[in-house]
Length: 246
Ligand code: OAD
Ligand code: ZN
Image (cartoon, rainbow, N blue to C red; front, side):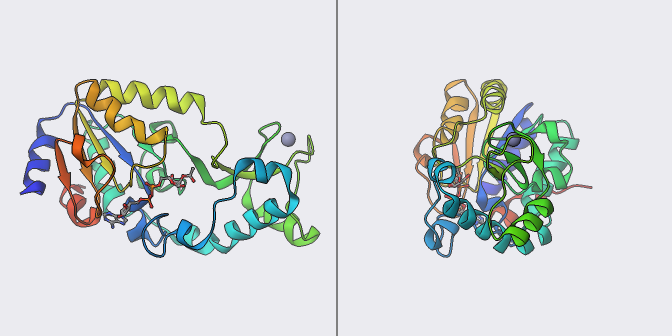
């Protein structure tokens, strides 16, 4: 079966690089983007240039974020996260590349510098001008006091969740490290991503072109199933559960 073949490939691999999307966190109560009920089936994305240009877009963006706070605060690592953390402790996984912003790889036991966050992190905020970091509590208090999304106390530019929006530049250091990891592994496993958002979706093919074997684990078919060595169209928690160690 596919799961047995995955077990063989993991046992034989020296260096495994996982690449994760929203599907690894759905069992933790966080909706994905493109499945029925997903974030982009309910709300149109707010583009970065809209956020920069418009106070009302910033207010709406922060209202959406506050509405999700209970979900993010309650989320704990799922079986997929825990399986990857076990393989990390076993020395097979040097770091994880993720499109997710939920901090759950860190919560499962990866040190912050072992999580390559291509799309940032939503558990804190940053000024888009000077980069000053802010806690969400501070943003919430200012929003409630002023009835509007706050600007930076240092430079007066808008404060935004520390995530990458459509139209916003990708983080250069993360792109560089993801490139190096993709080209240095012998097994690359894409987990829970529709693989439609670029440039992130380029890493599976980059790994494949550099000689790695490519596995895709996703409930639905993805854009890139045809280039994979193994495709498992099954639930992530059930597929990776057997790899959760102690
Ligand atoms: P998507 O919502 O596009 O894809 C998630 C995939 O996970 C879907 O194909 C689901 O079928 C699958 N899935 C969900 N739960 C699953 C489960 N329990 N077991 C197996 N498969 C499951 O999410 P991403 O590919 O992560 O970026 O989205 C990529 C980017 O688009 C995000 O990082 C975000 C979004 O816009 C930005 O906002 C810049
Ligand atoms: Zn600032």
